[in-house]
Length: 343
Image (tube, rainbow, N blue to C red):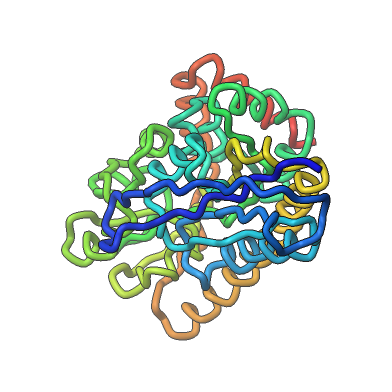
């Protein structure tokens, strides 16, 4: 019989402040046989993410992973920590690399802080649609990127999905790059997002997502960009007038797993991989349905004036030369691999 180590449970400090202090507990050394859920040999994996439990990334992503792993009945369970309970993106990916968190759902730009080429997945107008992103990550074109990420960080990318396209909101319509002039637009604080802002011709202001509503309400920033599911989640229609359908970037989610992967046997690894693939198949459709429902509600109640006639080609034509000029050689190689995956 092999020795199976039980997953450490994370102990959170009583005051759940940022950054959270994660006090590592130990995996118990319990002897166990092969598959079969429950019992002393159960491996409990922690899966963290930053989304609310109402968003598709949780309902059709994290929860599907947990449910599918449980159904596999191979002695593994998944405990989900949603809504940044275990820290912000940068803190969590560091904890995955160190083994304090087992699995996480991350944006590629956050992963780029550990391995720069990964950030290209979040570059503007890199993917045509969700199918293009899925084709890239499931095909040979992404193997060098995933292997390089694993070699550099010890973290494994198990799958990726699109959580919808990112669009602009502001108190005036944004139909072309010229409309961004003079607007203070909030972008996430990561090198790739700040590069995206420059590529699009935006004046980027860095504001944490958790502080975005207040920043817009108080006029600290004039506008922002996010996918529809995020815009709805924090009620930005209350503090913005126009939603401009620029679709300038696919909001990627990458499911990653740290060193605990090597503690699982082959059957357990297959169960986790299969569970992630089930989520990869479901999330884009869930996002699409959620987006359509939200847009229909906004059109009906007038929460946003939705700007459909955005000159996407003008944005794309402005962005691509900037990216090609400013990417490193390694980033440009990933960018070209993504373009080659279109067919």
